[in-house]
Length: 271
DNA sequence: AACAAGGTCAACCGCTAGCGT
DNA sequence: AACGCTAGCGGTTGACCTTGT
Image (cartoon, rainbow, N blue to C red; front, side):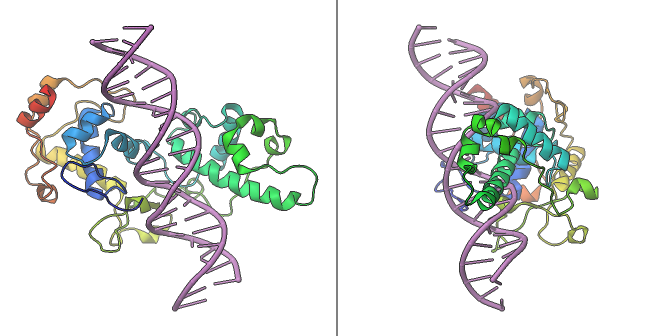
């Protein structure tokens, strides 16, 4: 991973998402809704699989997502829910609004590894078996039935979480070393307000702001509220009556990917 | 300052459930 | 019932970041 693979015209791209790709994806999801990912991947011109697009949206671009460390009550909830559901990450995530299964999975993995190491240390020499990470992550029954685990104390973090500080949520997409590509894989939440506005930082808010202004400038309106849980289905009539050419958006002009005329769209639909 | 070790998390892969035909 | 397609899920990987020495 890490390499931005795209072998030829037809092959799909892999690796970290760029800022422009993010913008494109947000735009098309805004227009088409967060379904039909293969279709979105196709019409958007992104050299990504539908699967990849979905993942990027679900785990990163979705405006409903929370960022930053899990709050203490969320951590507690994850523990409780994992006791209940095991490794059903998506099920657990549904109980934690704004959190993704991937996030929770990563959290669990990190903290269980830590916990397993602590256990190893504290129980070394003790006859009682310590709980290994593999046991925990692969079998919920072991975790739930293990008294040392169920009575596991809350992990108190020394750092103040985003929720504790009440700070403004900020996400940075850091530029790669050569400054030509963004390492979206290196996206980080910055809690220090002094970082704001530094070169190379790009806030998700900016994407949404840009999108808003784009809509104002070019009279492109979403056909539904993208923030609502159930997006009404898009009618083809409404799509076809709209010219999607984004003239004036020089940033995308050189990519030739952020253009979709009604004719092009029509041919896609008829395929 | 330089390096190593450990931590974090985005993104990939393989599998499967659900749905339509 | 069988098949194909799509979306979603869980496990895993590896690049980048942070912290310790």
